[in-house]
Image (tube, rainbow, N blue to C red):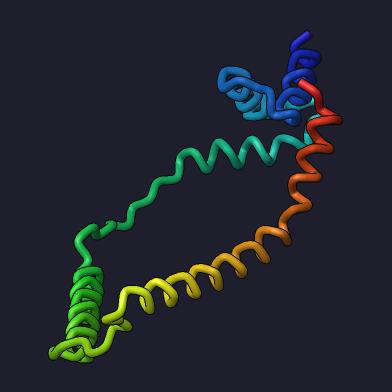
Length: 145
């Protein structure tokens, strides 16, 4: 009866369906000197599990590493140099001509021309994904709610 129970537990163990209590029963069974011959192949695995449970890590782990602080300071210094470089590269004087127009009609025409250019490119991009509407219509016909 015990052997039949162990075989069922082995089957459940191989399927990943055992509880911790059942796995403990298997470990206790395979600790014995006498194990059924057809289950002998499982014994080294469970002996290894029992031995590995007793292993402990004895090396000391340092949480305050000066190496980490060094890299933090270096990264902050790099960001500061980068920001300073960007600030000094930009001109400190007036920005010059920003495309402003004295005549409101001319400004309106320039804006209109720019918006038409944007609209043309946007419509070209939108037309290339029109097939997505077809896919949505087809799937809504297939998978009616």
